[in-house]
Structures are given as C-alpha cells and as structure tokens.
Amino acid sequence: MNTVKTFFLMMVMSALLLLVGAMLGGVPGIIFALVLAIVMNFSAYWFSDRIALKMTHATAITENDDPELYSIVREQASLAGLPMPKVFEIESDSPNAFATGRNPNHATVAVTTGIRRILTRQELGGVLAHEMAHVGNRDTLIMAMVATVAGAISMLAFFAQISAMFGGMGGRGRDNFIGLLVVAIVMPIAAGLVRAAISRTREYQADATGARTSGDPLALASALQKMEQASQNRPLKVAEGASHLFIVNPLRGAKVAGMFSTHPPIEERVRRLQDIRPNY
Image (cartoon, rainbow, N blue to C red; front, side, top):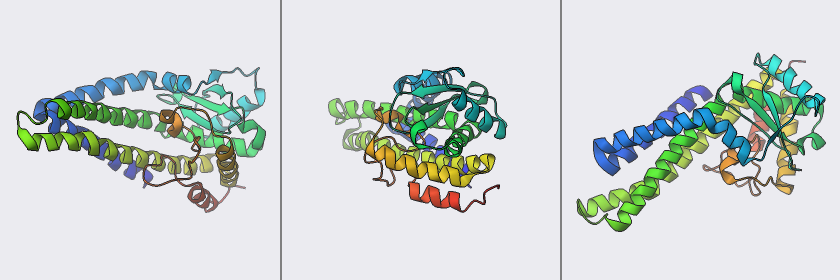
C-alpha cells in the first residue's frame, strides 16, 4: 500500500511540474520544465549523496575507528541482503542517523556520535535496519528525485514571481497576471505538501521493512522514542533542507506535525511497530 501511495504521489508531483510549465509558457513551458527536471535529476542521481554528506558535515570512518559500529552495520546489511555500505559519522550530541546513495552498491549510512551514547546495541541495530531498508527500498534515490522536482517547481515559481512583478500586467493582461501569481504562490506550497507526504510514506515503509529484516521491531520502537526525546532537548545543527534525511526530525519544534512535516508522528510509528510480531 505504501508503494502504491508513493507512486501516486510522485505522479502528482510530476503533474504539478508540467502544470507549472504549461501555465508559464504553454507547450514550450512544458518542454522547458521537463528539460529542467531531467538536468536536475541527473545531477541528483550522481551527486545527491555527496551533497547530503557535505550539508550534514559527515566524515568517513574506518572499521579501525569504530569496529563495533561496523559490526552492527554489517550485520543489518547482511540481514537485509544488501552490500556493506560506507560508514560516516557526524560529530553531534543529538542522536540521529540517515542513509544516502543512488543504489545499494553506492550506499552510505551516517550516524551521529550522540546516538551511541543513548541506544543499546539492539536499538542501534534497529535504527540501522531502518536505514538499510531505505537503501533496499531505493528511498534514497526516490527522495532525491522528489526533492529535485520540488526544486524545479520552486525555481519556475521564482521565475513566475519575477514575471508577475515586471511584466504580468502586459501581454495577456489580468488573466496572465493571476496565473503567474498562482504559479508563484500556490504551486510551491502544493509541491511541498506532496514532497512531505512522500517522505512520511517512505518512513513508515522503512520502519516496517527494517522491523522485518532485523526481527526486532520493539528495539526500533524504543530507539525512536529515545531519539525523539533527546533530539527535542538537543536539536541537531543542520540545514533545514537536509532535515528530511534523518530517521527522526533533527530540528527543535519537530513535534509540530501536520501536512508539511516530513516525518510521521513518533507515536504512530511506535504504535505500528508494536503491532508487528517480533521474530524471537
């Protein structure tokens, strides 16, 4: 069901992009929007992991640096039937983690130093199972593509805003001006809502997949509760544009959920995990 919902929402996002292009310039506008999306998606496919790691100030570590972390990552990758990813670390007391990479053969998982201080080995295993689920479900690529389409819509909306300010009352008159305002104001909001909905759907799916592969859904549920509380007390200093990458929202005030939230409510995630029968 989550996969079907994701596919539907991605179609909605694509339709929004084409609609923006059409409202800006008819058929030429649609072609321009498509070319822009293709170029941005090409860049995201090859460089999104590097951008994410740079934005979060993550640094690569070796097995000699942290053999226990490598052991847990290797164990969860094996349980998920995936190759061993690269391992990165973020120097922060705020407990969190994320995965990135265009496919399982080019995947990276990153954890904060703070996550090691509050989670047991089993709980950290649950978190890393969740991240490997993102890799296996291709969420790392899906969300990079969604982000680039949303970025293309925002860029076109900016062009519409400039056009409305300097030329919207000319040419096709009032109707054209109103259309430009719709593109400039409404479309970025709609794209943000769809992007957030896709992100929440993929988080639920990663929870379920990680719980199955690790065989310990209660460990992940416990980890989410601990991380949510700790993240509220010690938010992660990270750009808002990168907040959707993490397993729990790293920003202060993340409990203010709603349609714009990229993360589902922790209470609902925990409830769903508790409904999964553990494999022990």
